Length: 217
Image (cartoon, rainbow, N blue to C red; front, side, top):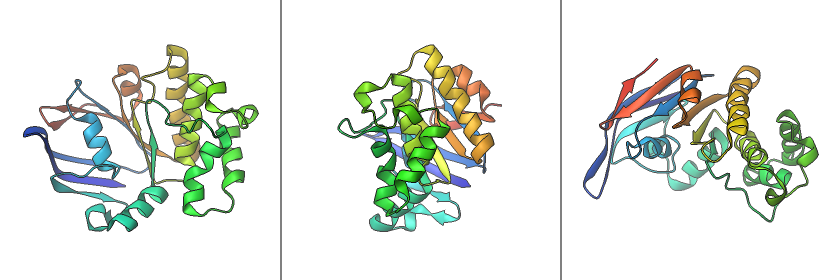
């Protein structure tokens, strides 16, 4: 599904990633853990094409993303990669279903609304489809963000501290949701987290330390 080779990244001469090698397999849930500032989010953003490494390669589904021009990379990201962020990043003026539809609208999918409604129903939000983010709880907002990440049926979903802004009950429900989606839809997830309970639930847990990967379980 995904291969990364010798990823290196510096910020202001500070070496954050010092040669990361990893593979992510189809239908796998992988957690990435490490101390604050270890480079977890940097790695996630590079793998998800939101940032670029100073050197090294990332291959997603047989495509070397470094070879894509900006237009092709944007299209590849839209179709093959989903993102879930800690603070939802929902557009406040749009309803839940409209927020979910956005990536599909960009893709030009004529069935965007039908797919969005079905996803919200799958995530237990069918009765909240016409509500705006301000009318939803934190847990509900994050489930809308999950639906938005899934709307284009991406090959892989990257989640950056997805439960970091949730209460314990909502966080637990979100964690279980990831595994239900893997089991029901065959979805692949890579999750950066400080939540060790979530990390321990993953098929594999990878720790970043001193700019390289230490393999956990």
